[in-house]
Length: 175
Image 1 (cartoon, rainbow, N blue to C red):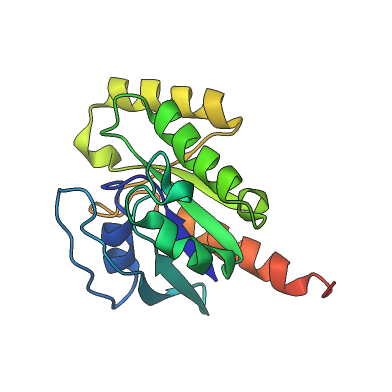
Image 2: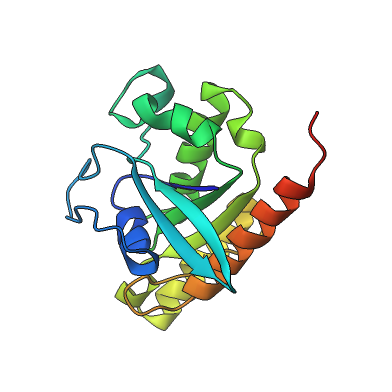
């Protein structure tokens, strides 16, 4: 149903572990996730299948890193949860990097509905959080969900947003 995308260490595996019974490897180094992880989240009585995709870096569409091997998995999802770490010096740049890779890869990935979240917000102070959220909003043209899979902040909002997009996609007539 939904693909979790973002740069390495954006909190994708932590989110998956927080909302499903999946137990992905979680560590603070690039490419901890070597294989897509799947989990089922329950939101408002409905099941939502989530795919944790290894981090995408600049050049992924050309084979840089390992994320390109898994972009095909993203093709099968109905919606994307794009996690941008609050630890990034420039969340806007991080968002743009992943968006460029989706566009360069093609296969209509960049056209999928996207829920945007500034993740790991529990690791920064209120003023920094405000600045980084505003920067990301300017870049993406919409406010991100402020999310912490560790504290639970924003998790239900993200799941509900994903569930609504999945439901809308399922209701679309087949073309």
